[in-house]
Length: 96
Image 1 (cartoon, rainbow, N blue to C red):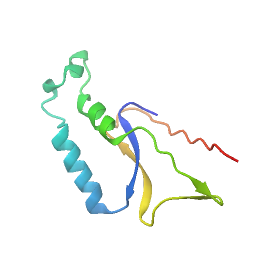
Image 2 (tube, helix red, strand yellow):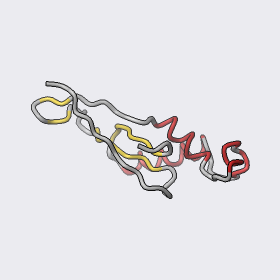
Image 3 (tube, rainbow, N blue to C red):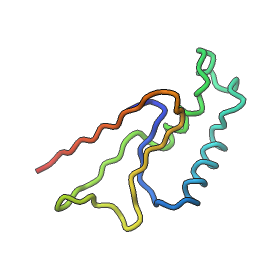
C-alpha cells in the first residue's frame, strides 16, 4: 500500500525477474533524475512512480477449497521501486 510499490502475478523465474528489472529501467530510467517534473518537489523517485503504474497496484485471485487459483508457475510478487519508506500489504478475502 504505497504509491511506488506494486503487486503482480507472473512466473517465478530468475531470468524473467531480471528481464522485468531491465525493461522497467529502460521505460523509466532512474537517472538523470532531472528528467522528471515530479523530482522538482525535492524527491528523486519519479521513475518509481512510473514503474509502479506499469506494474499495477493490486491483484485479484480466486480461492477454491482454501487454495489460491493460480496457474502452474504463477506466484504473487511484491515489486519495490523506491525502498526508502516503510510499506504494508493489505489482504482482503471476500466471498462465501
